Length: 94
Image (cartoon, rainbow, N blue to C red; front, side, top):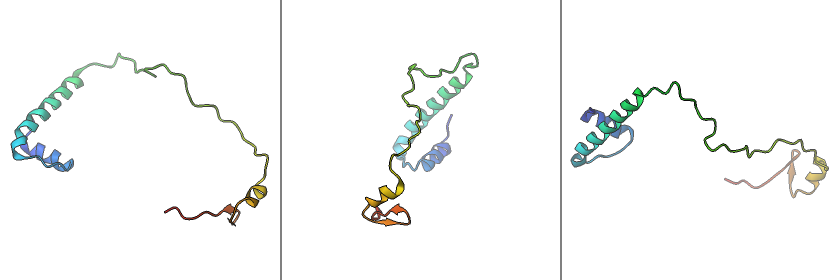
């Protein structure tokens, strides 16, 4: 059973304001949740295999390909409006 001090601590950690009239209801609900979690902890799941992919999908990620540009850095920078230190200079965003 969860105590009022436990409820106050959880509410403080979660930055919740619980009205005095709702405390009894929250205490009951949190106690039920904790009891359910204790029941789940008793279940033996050691023999159950962990599913790899429940939807059995194929990978949608394509393989990496090496890309060799046909144009060099100098040619690319010639098209930029402002170049500084071998890089394209842009306006500040933030």
